[in-house]
Length: 423
Ligand code: HAM
Image (cartoon, rainbow, N blue to C red):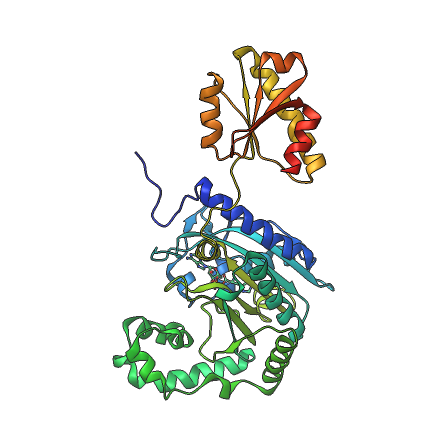
């Protein structure tokens, strides 16, 4: 039997029901903020991510799934959505003289070491805002996240961490100060940090190694390098968040693993998922549009990790969300099979129209007597069974059976619909 590729996970029906619920609620929040959905390709030129995410990042250095196209172009499965989003809006002239607020969702691919909450194919829902340079939009993106946690009932399990990286220049100055400090100490750093010294020294601040953390205690600190304008932007963001009642922690070690950030960065962290604590992350990336060939454009966004949000949702709400089936239709004889399907079509429509939502109505397949069919109905988790026998059919009626207490009543289709909706 051929198995799934390592790090590529199947989301089976029971888990997928939870995912659906989360995706629907998050997308509803995004729609309510009037963000517009876009769909982006899974494959892009490798160069997009090399230039966008940064040559020296872990993602581009060692985590991309890259392949040569038949004509020799190097393509990569997208490791994230921001660079693609910029590429698409820029390519279609949608960043010219206008603002944009968009969202996307779907799988991303990174060749990471798989573990709980970290996969090689994982899912993000991302939101990006273009053309706004004030801290108000940073705050809006954070509020969007907060409203998602409220809607999902996990608000008390996530904490917001924020930081500012300053302008691009400030970041460069800090980078070289950090390098000057750490280079003589290189032999004492952990292995990962030694490698990062040459590629992405800011990421060393993220190191979990206690020895490295000890060395960092006396290192130059990022806030001392942040320019006044950026500091003011950051202070205004904090004031707005306070006014909006959103709690946060300022974390000067929060630097993020992608190269495009400037000014604000933020992460929503949880303590309930062990090492993979970041459920959502983002920030401002004012330089990216220009880096990818466009005009200088202010931009900010975030991406929420659906796999991790789903794990957290399960911790908070262990019961399985929603039933797979609401109503199970059984029929009394083989020749009633098509009539049962017809009945199903009518009932779905009536329940939708009168009940104001989609009802999950499954029609029995494969025959068998009522007893056998009712066994299937019970196993499906449905609250209700509808029985269609020859007599009911002749009288234009159905029998509605409450599978919780076994009571049943024979009535017309319209009556059955009303009774189902009443509950
Ligand atoms: P990121 O921090 O790389 O940022 O990913 C965002 C979120 O995706 C993480 O907080 C995490 O929840 C989830 N995630 C990342 N890698 C994995 C993985 N291997 N397995 C499971 N979940 C994962 C970005 O991707 C930026 N594009 C976010 C952004 C949008 N910044 C501005 N706009």
